Image 1: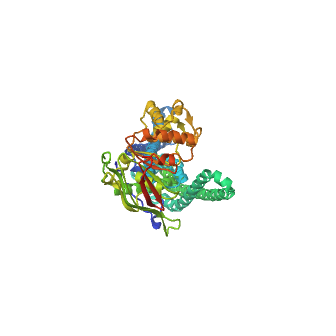
Image 2: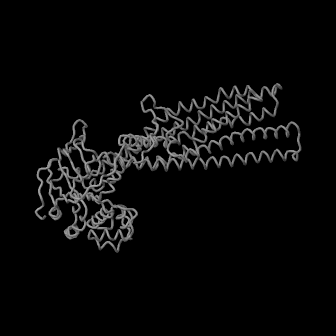
Image 3: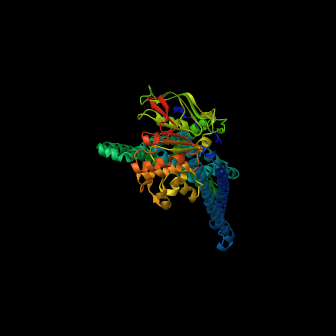
Length: 580
């Protein structure tokens, strides 16, 4: 299994809750992003030089016109140079913007891909965040990184380079202005840090409310029918309204901070430029400083403070993306830690027909109760060995632990006691992807996507041809669906009957020709005719495969080689099928 690079972590203690101008973890996601960021820095360097050249040239033109009385014709060369400088600055700004957007797109793509892999891995282990939370952070949240990369970060680069270059040039003509700049420029990042610390906490609180609101909306939409039947929709709507009002108040509070911070930064920059202007004006009047360098410094002074002011104003727009990134990194770091624990994975062993294939030894499974003080025991000391090529039926009352047993065999969680072996190798030592590629799974509730019937069957084998898909449907007895392969169905199979949805998921399970077929209530909730069609096709489906079926209907139980009865998390009886 390919291991992802471990991401650098950020402190999460309460005392370290500070607004950070740069999150190094964002730059460790994609090599391509670093290239674009270096290009952005290069454009920033060139733009800083252009700012100084433009100020010097413009000051020279003003000096020639107002003090030397130069004729307009004699200024042609200088005007051409000035025009070229400003056109060049425009081109540099365009290039900087393009490279910053490219870096943003690269990082967002990489972050989304890695987050999806991590979420899938955590879901496979039985842990996942709320759907609304993930949807919000992986879409709107990550999209907010555009403001971070395309606006805030470039301004931060300029805010570091322009003052540096300006100070180097001013040192050659007016050291006093350098002293003023050195004393006043640091005030802007200090105020940014002070305001950003408060705004960062406010943004985290607002983001948490938005995530709760997203989860609440998804939960309400999923349970609309239940809420309507029990007339509980009013309470849920009141909760959504409360969260919406709370989010509105927190958003307005954050905006007030943003406006006030812009005012403070503008005030500091304006006063600083005014101090430079007064100092320069007095010395020009007294004859201690020539007009041309003085004018160049006056033109350049606002440009020195402008990038830092803009970075401060853009910081608030970028904070949503940074907060979403924190949530995403929490998911990624958990996945990286789990990957580290699962190093040294083994390939799935080859097992001969008639030899033990899947063996459960004293397997127990429990999960924390809602109060986290107790645990709920689902399986308790399960001993079961399934040989290669055997068909085993698991029966028992609802809640006995049958579906949990199937999930553990799939690797969606680990036993809290005992072990599961595949061909004599512990399941937790096997590569999960390789193991699941050998399994066909039909879950209790059919899962279908919006798309064609062929697309839904092909989920089991993305490279399968249309003829392969038709053969799989024919194998499970769904010949009537073959002429409809190109027909588009809605979400969760809207447009198909429940029995047809079952047929599609069963065909999906057998399409990749799996060695192990796990069927969790494959005939539950469907009409008798469809049950008979599945049963009549079962001998064909089971040929050359190991099959474990969870079932209540005798129509499938009678087809098994062995019947295992589970009750209360324990095996109570095990017998050969009378049919066999």
